Image (cartoon, rainbow, N blue to C red; front, side):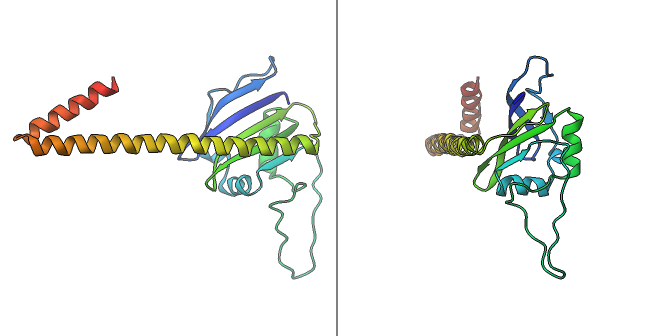
Length: 192
């Protein structure tokens, strides 16, 4: 692909491009932040359910699907050949992208990030490459989940130590305001 980006979502569903590999003549997107509205809720749901999406050529012609009269609509969420929102196609065309592949990084059922691949001309991606990219995203999700769990455990341990030290100091000192003042200063010193 001409450009591959790692995109990480924030708690408010906006996102940042946190890594990028691109052709030298393309404008870099690294460090750019995009609003949550760039990926609407229904698209976010699809990215979570169907973790790999490919558009081989933005100029494709969509083919309508017709079911039996009165039948429930067919759920195309997991279909590889599912059409893409015209708004998304226009968005990519405005960036001069002619082909794309996105691979979701899903942690605990939430869309954590995306690997977004763009090409400036039509591009067919072989099945084996698509599956390797999907497995890579799953490995990344597992690794990220482990890192975040360790960080959360470390913060919980640190909070417990501070709480214990504060309680011990309050029990041993006659002036609670003096104890709180010292603990606040210790916390400031620790952050510096």
